[in-house]
Length: 247
Image (cartoon, rainbow, N blue to C red):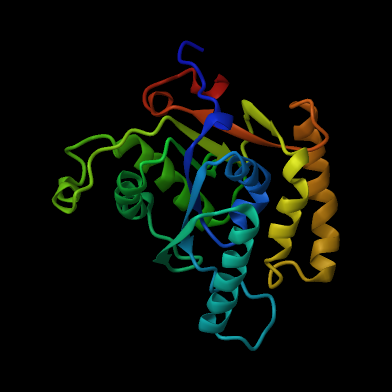
């Protein structure tokens, strides 16, 4: 590959774009905690509040949203997240990426991250539209945030164009970066367990062996016991670059 892959482990200011509460912890919690421990500032952009993700009947959407917001705040504290921005899109009804990317472009210009972490929008068989649309919006926002002719009204609010160094896409079929998270594995698990509405006992008992197996697989590629995997790219990789699949 002609264009070098940036080093996620050197990130100092990270914006994490998550479709729902719990997605960031599941996909990248160990890496987020590791970066925070090294002094990086971590900001979450939470696209939805997960209001339709309740597992128990009898709760209203407002009640579920309040529960999930509180769980996410608790999980963020475990990992060392500095701030959580709630974008306010409707759970299960996230609109097309060109709509979601607008606030994300402004947020990138405000936060000025060197890295953005999100999910890989090109994951095959991903049926949840929020995952596809939110993560694609994150990628598109990274591509456009550095262009002054895109959303020029941002300049009226003191926001200047900003070019991120790298985009790290978790849950990718083609990862190129493996991060050992032995030191933060317990934090990752603790943060996931903060989402009690999503992982009651039987659900956690089913889910944990899967996350452990994948984490061990990724860890073997990072000379670690457990790890996380990402497709890390620059914005240059995201436009008319036929080699990006193999990057």
